[in-house]
Length: 150
Image (tube, rainbow, N blue to C red):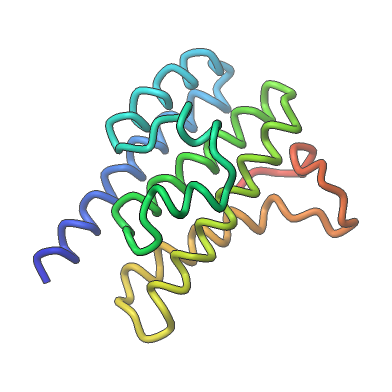
């Protein structure tokens, strides 16, 4: 119970921090947003350079395939990074970030499961809702050109 409460507090804290950074992204301050995103990702133990360098499958292995404390923030950071990259016109980098976030989110969903904690399931479903905003029905990989924002 204590571990679950700690995890939920950490997820909530990260969500608040990322929401502030997201405001910078869409408020026309992408450079400041990227600096803050790098700092916060490093504090969460999921540095951007680390996330950028590794393939999606390697990220799962290194983060720990059952380590929700690392996997959830990594997916959240990658989603925000993708939004920032799309805002900067870096569509290929944005698509790669989304691909990694989707793989991590799928693993998290499998870990939490249908009968898992309702709060964790809600967090996972929120990740998937944001990921759905990046789905291109035409099958194109140019996901930086999505319409609207999550």
